[in-house]
Length: 316
Image (cartoon, rainbow, N blue to C red; front, top):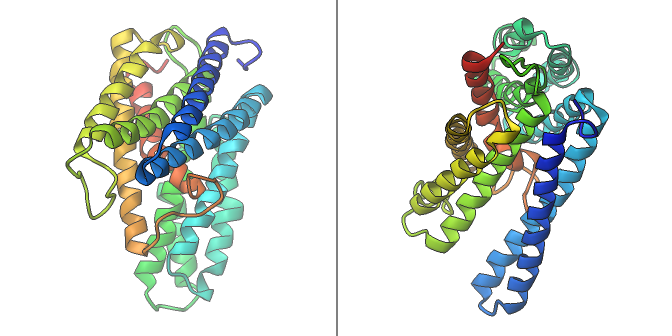
């Protein structure tokens, strides 16, 4: 089902547009009244996030309008750009160039082609088994053993995070649910709304009530209060969206809780990667959000977990 024919999907998008309109108006009003420099900086950051959300919402809507192949292409492009951002931060040598060419121009497109044709048996093991072994052999054959383990591990990890994990988001489009057929687009939008909503809500709760740092050496802006408030609010948000999913209201709430927790874990792990590399953001492609990988870091953990939990308990 596409956006033109799926009533639940239309209501989800309609609600998202209304929310963005309200957020935009409120953000502008608050920006006019803010006087303190710290408050102004916070409001500017929040408004930049809202503006970026408008752009992402339009792009996502266009991809869904095209049909399932549009969403697969969109996430394939996101993976390609995220992989590029990740690789620029890790140590590589000239001997790794052929392995990188394989990663960008064969393994990544092949992974998304398998997702597009719903070949679960192969897309679920292509990267963690075959690409994992092949890349190590390809780099070993280059004859350069300098920092071999570090170089191979970095490229393998980049593929796992940026391609394999993210590919589980569009894989939802082909996931059959008992008694509901394949409600893919609504499942995908449910995942994206909850995981991104959790990020925003944790930010807002952290700014309003945050006192205790949850991981001061990895992500100074994350607080215990922001985490608890954001996850609780995202869980409620997911429960309120139960009507657009194949889940009962309590099941939608539980799924949202899983998404919020795993999304937080993804963000924290990727923050550790950035601190290790000595950078604030993975890139600058999205105004107010940093790089592509900064925006989808939560999704890298949430997408595969949500897919497998849904497939195990509800798969047809």
